[in-house]
Amino acid sequence: FCAGRKGGHKGRARQYTSPEEIDAQLQAEKQKAREEEEQEEGGEGATGDPKKEKKSLDSDESDEDDEDYQQKRKGVEGLIDIENPNRVIQTTKKVTQLDLDGPKELSRREREEIEKQKAKERYMKMHLAGKTEQAKADLARLAIIRKQREEAARKKEEERKAKDEAAMAGKRLQSLSLNK
Image (cartoon, rainbow, N blue to C red; front, side, top):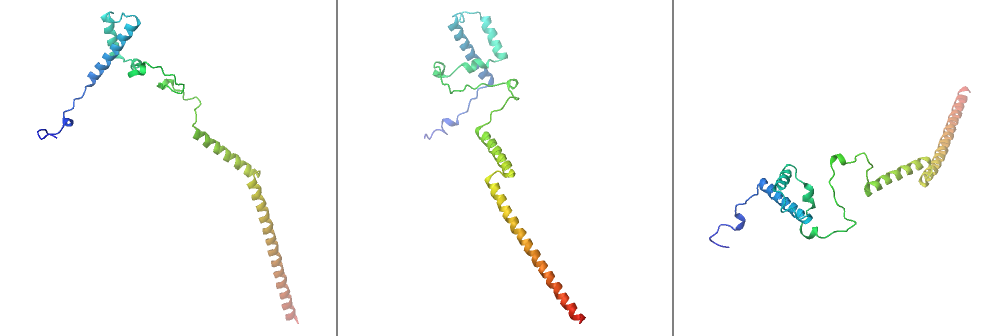
């Protein structure tokens, strides 16, 4: 900590690179890469026509080659060939190349969910048809309950008839006693 300074190096004014400077640097790198490629191919690139270099520079400005920029690799990556069968090289597709009508790949979870729903539907269908163990048990229970209800209804009917007969007998006795 120095007493003479106000703040450290972090307080300095920041300098930003303009977009034009960045474009110029990228074009210079591309041009340098092309010259190196030409030297490797025939060795004529350095002594070639300056007009060709001018044309290639103008064409870069109008439509930049993204392929050359993607092919250029950082560090040692360009020297080493990677033979990994599991490595997937991602390619960007244009909207016109997308196949929207084709069959779509489902994830494992989605497949399992669909299978689960289908199994549930099959079970419910069999259950309604009375073919599952649970359905058979339910039907047996229902039959027992029906018999119990029928017996209860029969007993109730008999009791009602007995009451009616007792009431009729009581009325007969009453009418007989009145007639005497």
